[in-house]
Each structure stands twice: as C-alpha cells, then as structure tokens.
Length: 349
Ligand code: ASP
Image (tube, rainbow, N blue to C red; front, side):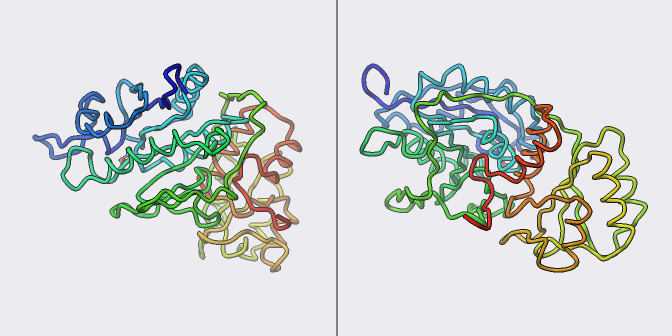
C-alpha cells in the first residue's frame, strides 16, 4: 500500500497488439505510444489505486522478445519492488508464455503479483478484449487476502476469463479471445461476474525471504521435435552443433521415440559429451513417463532426463536459465528434476 493507503500497481508496457494501431499505408499493425493507449482506457481513473507506468522505448512485437529484455523487465521490477503492491506487464501474446516462464525463474522468492496480459485486438478497436484484460489484471495485481498478504504472489497470465500460472501456459489460439491454456495445472482464478481465486492452488513463498532477482541465461539450446520419418543425418547434425549445451526433445505420447539404433546412439553420445537432453511430450495434456514403454525406456538408458509435464516454453526457458548460472551438469540435471516455481508435477505430488 502507498502512504495514502491506496493499492499501488506498476504497469509495464512492452508492446504487443494491445497497444498497436493500423498503419494506414500498409494495413499492418504497428505499436503506438503508451500515453495513447492509456487514453483509450479512461476507466482506469475509476480505480482508487495509484497506477504508474513504465513503457519500453520502442515498444516491441513480442516476436522480438529476447532474454536481454526479460532482464530489463526484472530490473524494473527489482528497482520498484518495495514501492508497489503488484506489477502488470502488457506484452504481445505470441511469446507471452515464454516470458512468463522465464520471469517465474528469474524472480526467486517472489512475494508480490506479476501479472502478464495483452489482447488479440488493439485497445482502440470497438470490440477489443484489451480493456477487460487490462482492468482485471490490475484488479488481480492489487488483490489482497484477509490477512493483508497479496492474493497471488506469482508470475501469472491473465487472459479472457482465467488467471493461469505463467510457467504452465501455452498460446493455443491465434484468433479467439480465449488464447491461453494451462493444460496441466488448474486456473488460479476464474473471472466472470466475480473473480474467484482458487487459493489452495496458489503458490506462496515465505514473505520474510527477500525477492532474489536473477539475470543470467545461456541460449545454446535447441528444441527438437520428433516425427515419423525423421532422418539420422539431421538429428546427428543438430546434436553436433558447436557449443550446444541442451536439447528439449519433443517426443510422442508419454515420452516415446522411434526404436532406431542410431537415435539412441546419437542421444547417448551427446549425453556423454555433456549435452543435457530433456524429454517432454508433444501432447498438451499429461506427462512423460519413460518407464512405461520400451520406446521411452531406451531414452532413459541413453541419459535423457524427464521434463515431466512441463510445457515446451517452460522447458526451454528453464534450461536457458539454469545453464546461464554455470552450475555443474549434475546440479542442472537435479534442478531440471525439481519443481522450482510450480512448473512441473512430480508423480509423487
Ligand atoms: N504479434 C503480437 C505480439 O505478440 C500478437 C499479440 O500481441 O497478440 O506482439
């Protein structure tokens, strides 16, 4: 709360459709100034909140998002952490799930809400979904429990009518307003006439621990999706790329791969060269269980580690994050197997 006892929220505008306008010459959507965006939402004045803003210059389409820009967001949050009750990040939808995953690892011991949102239609358009998304995201960022603690001290995505744990999300629709899903973890809140928080699902760090920001990434990683007919020469050359540190291997079903001798051999050799290979499934629901079929077991025997029910966005950002911290390989393997920010469901949990 601010001195006047009003809730306070910092709105960080990175770009995305929400703040775009149609270029009259080309017809393409381009970013416009943040002040213009706020003028489109006079409703914000009706909140009895302190709402301050920070705008990326220039605003970006989220397809241009980069780890350096995640660092920039984290620096802003770090510098303003004590001043605000919560943070709302306006972000393009295309890579929002990657940013949400990355931030969930970068903001260790987070005890305040960091809510990402955006829209499918620019905020200036009559049928925009941006206004409701923005207004509700601000309300959620300022929401408190009866004991005065923030309701959702997590990195989340709010979109359309659900509040989702950020590192569990995937963009599933390029057209509908309901663009995000969290297939393997239920919504933290559902929004209709009321905002109904599922408090038992919300993660809480010890509020006594200081928030610890992290800034390092190593992007010597690749995502490799298997398909029937995948060629040995292509797999072999991907695994031989100089500097490669880790692979997110997108397998079939519960973590299965073709039973080709060459595939296990190349994966095993890569593993032995210190390349970490993480198995996640191409299915949206459910988890990898490498013990279940012989086609999965061969991967386990080749040194591949399980990514459980991690999304691709989360697996790749978690790897980049862990590799950035120059930890011994064994430690990274252990941490990939651990739930750091609510991103995986272990069998036993
Ligand atoms: N291309 C846009 C972006 O991700 C799409 C959006 O915002 O919905 O920045």
